[in-house]
Image 1 (cartoon, rainbow, N blue to C red):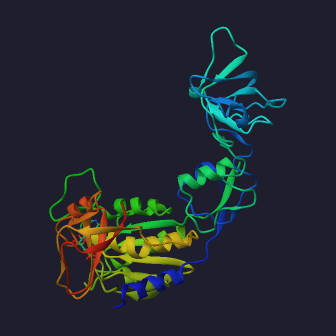
Image 2 (cartoon, protein in one colour):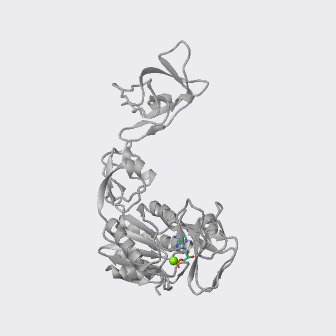
Image 3 (cartoon, rainbow, N blue to C red):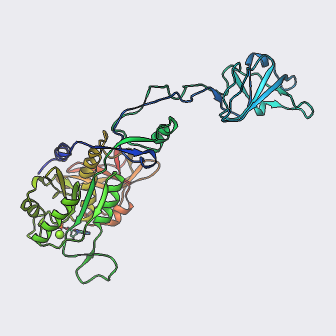
Length: 401
Ligand code: AMP
Ligand code: MG
């Protein structure tokens, strides 16, 4: 039985090198960037106003006060998107709006609220307060300098990064290709929804839950029909899924029972099993194999075992497949509001609920078939073997929601 880190290292080592494709920025959210991007321009590209107000020379209004305002001649108006032909000279000002280019000669913008325009003096503005040079001016390149690095290969394209790339005018980027991942659920007891349950049967739930986390990891799920606990049926289903997909995730049929056929069927079709069993709870009977440059992730059938092993061992592989440099689950610092107890001899990734104040509680019963506690959970806490983590202890919470 492998330790978790060893299992993860072996999975990541087997992931093929990422391939890239050109992706429109519109479609790039959640993708992994495959190139270093340098800015083709300065941001802002020109000095401009941060306010609705008047461009002026700060020295002209040094003495301005509400009861003795400084009178300036209004030399023009520049709506955002236009430019001013001319100079701001002594004792003049130019009407500006947020984003209007700063006219040459001006060194500051007084905000409209600190000015007054008197009814019969349309060509004049009274400035009520002094202002420092540079005030309310957004300087060229203060955000980004032309040629500087905006994003690195391996980074996730978040909304913020995509916004930045759009702001420098990029229409598309190179992103890691998303793997297509086949989802197979094995078990003769499994039933599709829509019909009342036959005696002894259960509704299948792993493909749905796994497809959801697959999408969050940027992969493309492809669900296949249910697979009965029959060796040839399992082999046929695996072969079909491998013919269509980059990787195959199965659930069920990887344990020690005589009705567990995944490993055997995979080897019969020419797959090479790399390892089986990882020293974690839930999810010990996890199987991993390679077949013609593609990967098999054989997850246990219990819904929580399937989901937790996916998050810990499959998600990182799918992210690495797309070229991501950081493949671990996001970690939030929390403090236990109650003890978490692991009497077992394997690490237990326990389902917890982290509240906004950082308090962490068990999300409910921890048995690997209990879905309600997974539904209530927003994270996992790694509790070492034979260990009680006491109330008040600081714990890292692995977020997956
Ligand atoms: P197995 O790993 O095949 O021994 O299955 C372990 C447990 O998980 C059994 O109680 C199965 O009925 C249940 N199970 C297996 N696959 C699924 C599935 N796709 N959806 C819901 N429960 C499942
Ligand atoms: Mg089964």
